Length: 332
Image (cartoon, one colour):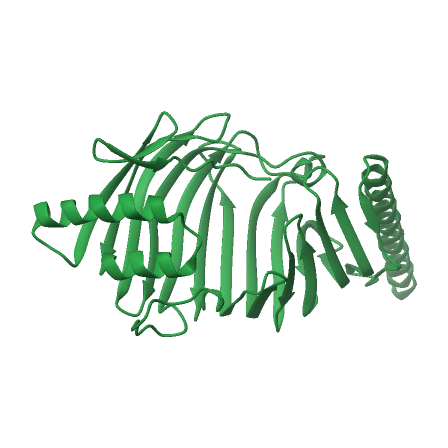
């Protein structure tokens, strides 16, 4: 009896070892093919070293000095290391870990991202496209600095994206931050008494894209929003407060159609902060301020306004009055 048990254990151990080795080979081959295909498309896709360990229950892969650059967007990412962890018996549930310091270069600026911890949990469907089922990203001690002399930070940032049953391309996204501090290079208006960080910055939105998020989102192009249902977006900064909710559809050019209602508390100070930032055209702010001033007089409340913004035919309207071009909603 004991001899048979020993033989059974030996057979099972050999079978599991074969399974792990086969998985290791498949993972290694898959990485090789992916990097070769990216280089063939003109990407910079390089690393100094790659190692997969974790026998017998894990596939833990570490890239050293990784560089990825997409010629289509001219965006490049550099990291001293990047790690991907998965249980050998659940390979479609992946944990990704980023380094404490990494850089992202765009045609207009270079961003340096520092964090005390940055990781994501990704659950993928077991199909050849590796379609996203859900992901949760957690960043702690975040600081983002730009070569254009601005910096922003947050004590913590949590982002979740979960597939919804309505369609394979519908996802619910939730954002939650703690002690988010806007870019310090954005000057505040004279006399402004605002804390360094927001007391609240969160959002809850359901988005239907033109296709599901899968491996082609990195390899080819990003899925594009077609329906956006904003349940709530909230920002509180001292006595300034903005809330938004509404629903829009987005056409193939990225123009929205629909209405988003914004509640603004102490809206005059919000306009003053926008002016001081230098990020919004003074002409647009003049138009918005004039329209809001009229709306506040009609509403009889100078401090708080409910503002229905309608997007149609490439324009943003406050009531019947066009106040600005509609934003173009496209992921690059």
